[in-house]
Image (cartoon, rainbow, N blue to C red; front, top):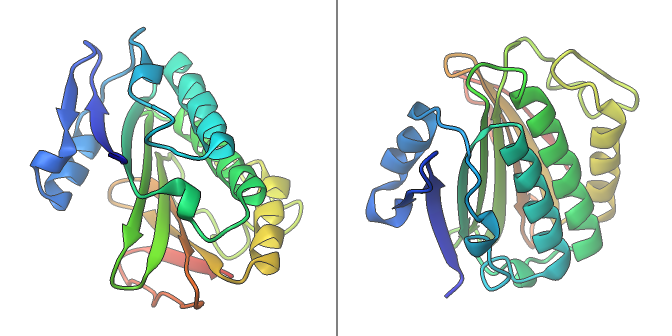
Length: 212
């Protein structure tokens, strides 16, 4: 069983997100602002769930960092990570950079929210990795954040995102979409890995850019 759809509250109580619909799970994660306590995160993040050693190591490391910063985490892994059509070293680097940036920005907010979702989109035959974090500034220029040496108050690690863009250019089966939800004050980066490159259309309710 490679499914993990779990929300953890500060009493160590687990909620199975598979028991509620997708929109309900999203609202459940977004509306509860609860920090970690010293529960055993590793008992939930099993290598059987994230079944690639490199990806497993990065995700566990970043989650422990988020726990130490008292961030709220919503974790949803519903795909075989080892089968994702992307070099695992490069993918682990991309995840490390995106999670570092998300933690760095999210910890500066009152919500302290961090969401990691990994699932397979059967309609497009693609694996999708979504990383979201709460932000204070919703006026980030999403068209420029992947530019070398670009920085902002919310995302000072411009060189890291530039590296992400280089990995994606070397692996055209992957592309990333960046969106900002001004109402929820959430910054989201969606990495899609598929056999054919497709572009998302702009949503008028969000600020969005695509890097492929």
